[in-house]
Image (cartoon, rainbow, N blue to C red):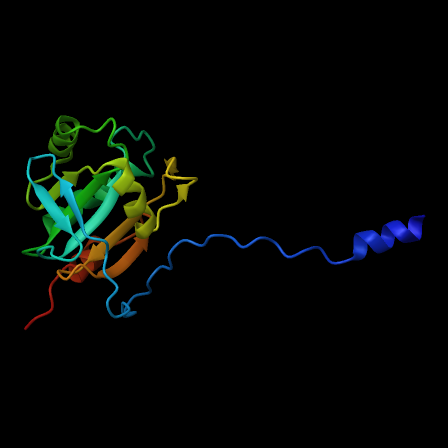
Length: 191
C-alpha cells in the first residue's frame, strides 16, 4: 500500500495551464515592429473637444492612466507629481494625456477640477475619459492588467510614449522614470 502511494505521488504532474502574458515591454532602443500602431482612439477632453490617440494624432504623446480618487501615494499621486515635472520640460508639439480609469465617476467637471489642482496646462497636459467598452481594450494594449470580461483594471503604473504616427515608442512600467529621459523620447527627430 505504501509503495503504491509513493509511486502515485512521484509521477509527473500535468503541465500547468498557459498563463496570459501581458504585452512585452519594449527595451530602450528596441525598434517597434513595422505597422504596429496604437489603436486609434478619439477621447473627449475635460476642457472640451477631443484628442486623437494613435494613427492620425498630431505630435508625440505621453499617455498614462489614473484614478482621481486614488489615495495611495506610490500610485496616482506619484504619477501626477512626475507629470508636473515633465510638463515643465515638455518639448514643443508634444503633450501629456492622462486617461481616467474611472469614467463612471470622473465626469468632465471632475477631471477639469483635478487638472486644475494638478497644475495641468490644457493643450500641454490634458485629461480624457473614454467609455468602459473602449477603456478596457486600451488599458490591455497599454499593458495594464485587465481581469475577467472587462470588469476590473489592476492599479499598476504605465507610461506610453507614442510618436506622431501613432506608433508605440516606449512602454515604461512603474513610476521610476526620469522626466528628462521621457522628454527626449517625446522630441521629434530632426529633419
